[in-house]
Length: 119
Image (cartoon, rainbow, N blue to C red; front, top):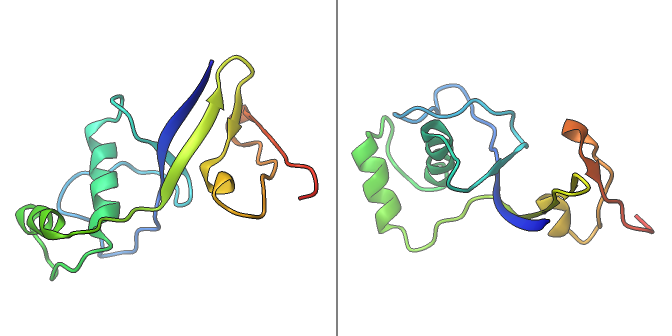
């Protein structure tokens, strides 16, 4: 079955920039699938990625961060849509769908990645 999944690219976290709530430990540049199966710390990671792009004076409490997020008119997080075929275990990476350079063979996680001719 072919599905499309909303994904967020995991940002690099620098020392001293950790939010005042639990966040999942994931490698920068990897993808977090955003769906109902997300654990609390994965939701925390998503909110932290949104909060990293707004201005909150450190050390911002959870309430200050949430209030700033709610007041912001435009929230941006790096990500997109990832296409997955569960029958063939093929994944079309969201980062590659959104760039003019086409698709590249990544081969991470044992999944086959689709190349595009001429790239």
